Image (cartoon, helix red, strand yellow):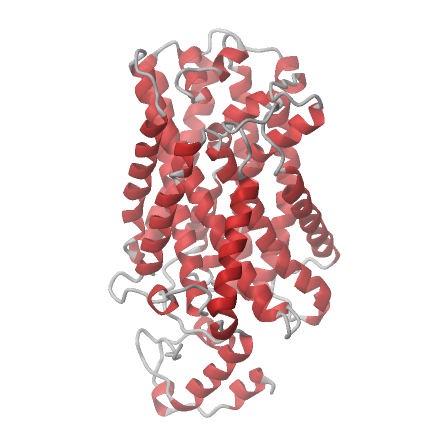
Length: 532
């Protein structure tokens, strides 16, 4: 049955005719088989705010500097940013084309369901949804851990006799996660928070960019910044050392799908979401590259001493040496922490939307509860609570290994890239010209971007699983393979126990919307009520 034609022919009740607030975007959403459950409070600027606040590339470089220092030094960071930005442009183009053609809060899992062969559509979509949500969980965990380490590091800098223990950072991690939880509990304030986070990040970037180089008593030579490679990983091959460290420049560009999950909260998402995604990459590259160059020129003293700082936060030590003032260094680090908190808030927004949208298609256990939107707060509160609780539990990994941060970063990158790759594979198999294109469509350029994304996904799955240092010990091991095994085990168990029977694919969704359009359209903020 041609579902779209059935929708068009479905008789519309008088109640439906009276729903004047049901706009064109809501009708397009209904044709996909979904209700307009969330209000469209976001503008393109606030969506960009959420997207950039999450990726926040210059902040990510600051947080991940410790591994980058040992796995390539300045050359890794400076040239790694350029490499990853070019690849991320291809990723952004691929996501933008799909978001423009099929704007939906489900993002990549929805695209996979629409584009995959009918026989495999439900499983491809289900797999994509789980990988995407798991990736968002590990993203939130890595940001919270970076912020926890920064907070404890500031305390240590002000109290030199203080010795940082693992559990100190763990407690700070939980505080950051709990504090940022409350910012996603009221829908109408989220666009303002996102916009404020964007301005805060750019202002903090500007202040640090100007202050540190201008007050540093000495500056490094250009050769040090652009031609110095440092390999303290134990790997005999500098190429492997570079790849091992590349994960840290990849992290700030890894979460580009964030804006796609706000497609049901912004008007004209087919136009606005691509702007937000590509704008995120453009701002991210500009800020992170100039920030890195400025910081490396401003290094005072021996580079290895910065890497071995007692604060465990190299950028804080860099600030302290440049300013020669404890309070001044803490103030600059506080700007990074505030920016990081905005990143964590955006990550919570992202992961809760992923959880909620996936649950409404019965992709998760407890989907009836997780798919509810709080009628007063206008947020998927249940999905938000569960996601944040899981993030809190993931933090326990740090108690077992100090390399947990790198494992979290690697997991978020690879799981997300795999979730991007599945719908792109489906698109190429189906044929790029065999779907209705959105306003953003780049033809041959888009196809090239698709293949770059797929090749980079394979590269990251293999190469980012390598140990961070040699010889391998329990304390420095890359545990990301264990993370993959756990995630795949959970997916497999849930699929055979529940998912294969209850998951709601495109046929079920569109048949339900035909019934609703023909028989029972209700009000409720001008939304279509579809029984799940």
